[in-house]
Length: 436
Image (cartoon, rainbow, N blue to C red):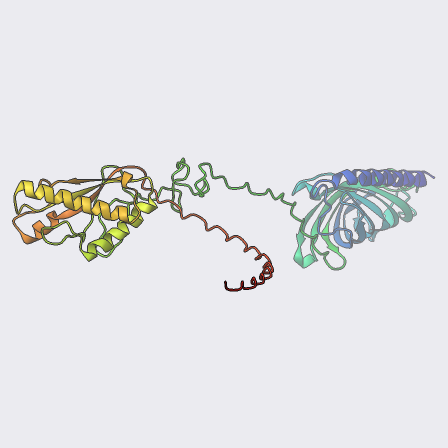
């Protein structure tokens, strides 16, 4: 009865540990590898092959024992495993011939209470086994070696070292237990002990059964919220966004290039031969020499080529309708000052009158003669005298901005012609009166 009660107590303790471990396992599983009982086992069955060394209770009257055992287990959670096992140990009997033999079969529970890369493989173990003992020494001289059956209760600590690929991701297993032999046979041992306490060390391999489980699928990345890009800003309204604008604050209406900087101002300059006259870029005080506007020798009559050039000048004046100009005439130094002065005045007036005839408002122009007073080249050479004989346009006011061409207006729809009225009937000619 004593043996049955003790065995029941051990089994009840194992059940309580198992339930507590599995309850705690739910919380333990919430963290990564919390209390893992060798993570490579997972939920597979496993077996262990163990060698044993027993430091016997000295009251047994035996030497230390050796043996081994097999276990078959299963991990039910990351916190708890259960297994059935069988062991055989043998001890040399002091002052005896035969050896003491113990064979046991039972169940054990393994609890893995810790986390961490090393401590997660430390476990506590509690077990109960049915034992068959042969040739145990006794104080009975007539029956010195006796056989009996018993209940072994054990508790201890163990450690798993691994996993190793050559063990199918299993581990090296080592554990130390204190084992109680709860027998009820009188006269055993040297002083009639009714229980024995042994220390047992087991070492061996734990090998999972079956294929290794597939690794868990990689966690899907958290969705990334797509924030729409802010619309580009053009603070100065020049058509180039601020992120590209190298010249911020451009005045409204100022033409700019691709990086938002003002375009170079057009220079007011005398056109090259064959190029049309333009007033763009000219400001008050600027002068344009009308090259090719020549006159018949010693006269103010325009040549044909001069008229062609002045036709272009009238177009330029029309494209800048607010510009006012002075037409200036100049001569070389041949002849008297008085003569050259009057000749330059007549020639300037001739140009002005031609432009008026081409539609340029006379109120936008004045004429002046400067004679030989403003040479631009050496009057001692033919080339210099030719450059000094010239007509100039001097800008005196207004804007040289080219006016945009007006949009063409749509032609009005033609009205239907009214129906022709019928011609009135011709009156009959009066009858001829008789001649008197």
